[in-house]
Image (cartoon, rainbow, N blue to C red; front, side, top):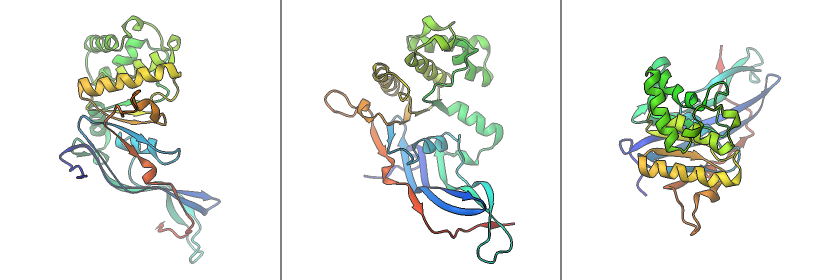
Length: 276
């Protein structure tokens, strides 16, 4: 199969590496590699399910695409210099490199307000546990990202109500989230993610906390958003069976199996450190 080019892809990850260094008492105990030269592309309008065993990096991949997690090294800690036993070495607890392009923009080169504006404009997030603000009504929760963007309360509330109607949740607009069912909360969270008309929806186990009777409804809702509104969706899930219809046909564009990039436990205790 021909690889997507940068121009063809709305998401393009190139040679992504990620590993974790476990340090105990200034000793490097182990090094765990999650991604090794991972390449992952998504065309505009695709609905891609990211699957794989626990610990293979599914949520990490989604967070990196959405810039909730950075690509590069971070959280430096000291370890003993075993080579000459003199100066301590600083190493990152998390090591990483690679490029992540969204709409042609390397998002990890963006900083501060430019980064926040880009994410708010192009990416909508949906999580397993909704993250609705309990003190706000359903309508206020949905409208909030649009108000943060700088739109007026009137315009934000008007669009929020339209989205809630599309989710069959407009009758709950003035209620607080705590009286809603899990499936209803997730519909509100989806409406909130759509309020700024993003190009991409990133969904992390959106049916993971739902009763089985609600899972199919939420998946069908995602499929409708993808097919009717042409929104690109990347969804992490363990619930692969829900992505197939009764004829055992895959209802989304494709699956991306991260099992092809297994967790590797490296026993080599020597690492390249940054001396200070």
